Structures are given as C-alpha cells and as structure tokens.
Image 1: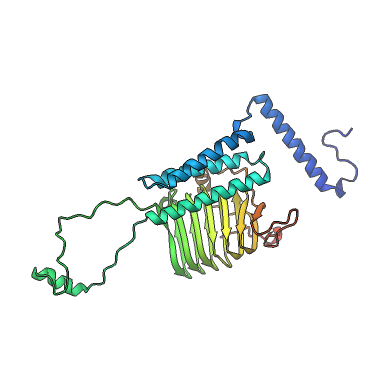
Image 2: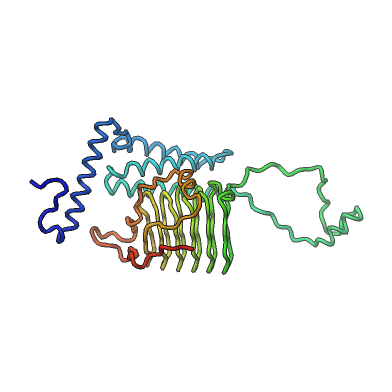
Length: 328
C-alpha cells in the first residue's frame, strides 16, 4: 500500500490519474467533515431542489404577468434567489436537470427585461414651432392653428417610476467610465457601441450588452446575469452568476461565473479566467454575493452543439501564454 504523499512509479507519465486521485481524496475529506460537523444542507438533496425550484419559478411567472408597483424589484430579487438555489445544487444534479433549470432561469431573466421595456415610460415628441408658441404665450392669444395651452396649475398624472437603468448607447471611439456610486446595483445597458473602451467599477444588478463591435469592456462583479447579444470582435471581462451569449462571434471572455456559461448561435468565442482587479473590488464582491471560490469559466454549454463527448467548435480556451495579465 502506498503511503500518503508517496508518488507511485510512473507518476510523471500519469499526471491526470494523480490529479483525479487528489480530487477524489479532497471530496472524501470534505464529505467526512460535513458528516462530522453536521453541516449537510437540504439544498444538497435533489428532491428538495425539485420541490423548491418549480413552485418558485411559477411564482415568478405569476408576478411577471402583473403590473403592480414594485413588481420589477421583487422579481429581480426572487430571480437572484432562484439562481443561487441552482448554483448551490449543481454538485448533485444530473446534467440534463442543470441545463433545463438554466434555460428556465434565462427565460425568466429575458421576460423580466421585456417587462422593464414595456413599463418604461416613453417620451412624447411634439413637432411645433417654438417661436410661434413663445409669441402666442407673450400675447396671451393662441397662435392660429395651435391648441389652447393647458393651464400651468394642471399637473400630469403620476406614472410608475421608470426601471432603474444606466449605461451607454450609440457611441463610437469613446473612452467610457462609470464609478460604483453611479451603478449601485442598477441594471446596466450597453448598446450600439463601436470601438469603445468601457470601464465599470462597482456592482451592477444585471448587465445587458447588445450590438457592441470592436469594444473592450471591464466590469466589476455582477450580482445576477450578463446577457451578451449580437457582438463582434470584443473583449469582455467580468464576474457574474450566469452568462448567456447569443448571436456573437470573435469575442474573448475573461470570466468568473458561478455556473456554466451558455452560448447560442455563436462562433469563435474564447474563454479565460477573470484576472482584472481594481481598488475596492473585494467590497463589490461582497455586495454582489458571488462565491469567489466557485468559478466555472471553462465550462460552457453550446446550445447549437449536441454531440456528446466532443468539444464544440464554436468556443475554446485561451492558451495561458496568450492571456492578458496586465490590464492598465
């Protein structure tokens, strides 16, 4: 029998075997520790997951069908809890169940985004001559062909507050920056940007990235999900709970993600572990609630690749020698 710590003959030829042995030994030690300390949690039982996930998903769907004030904030909070339940359960769930649950959470996130857009007040535009209106106001007589102005004392009816949203849209060749105080757990939207460098310090609630081309995005810990859609030739780096990438190509991701990333209708995507840092990033990690010890950056589900046991040609891992290590 081999003594602990002793290397068997031929170790140099079997590094993967030794690695598996070490992983199995660590799992056994962890299991014994949990049994000893009585730390087994209900979420580690698939029956508990099944009994909890389904009803909570249905409750969120019911909330999304309503229009009550405060709806979006409640849905976002419950979605974050649902994602955490899934993250904590992945160690014992079968791959099929994990994929189905990830798809369900993604659909709910997309439905929440659609709801945000639907509830966001739309600006009204009036094509009038400002000079005519000013002259009419000065004379006290309405200009010919114009409606009588509403009395100043009349106020517009109150509307539901717009969803908390911030970000940048429709810019080219710009250096863009947001501080943590500006973000404060808001949903961040970056859309229609070209050849821009975007730096986001702080902790977004959700990050939506659409139509970026040739851009470089550095972002602090995202509390829930990052959605990337229709992007080309970009460099992204961020930590998050979940990444969903759609219709994008030729992009690099330096990623910290607590569950498998999902790609769909994508080509030529490349992944490496998250290495960017900035002052107070640890504070932002604490605010986000992300588990820094759990990083599944190299586990990607390609919804367009169904061949079991064969690597998808649509994504790859960036070789260590080619990875960025200095970001300034």
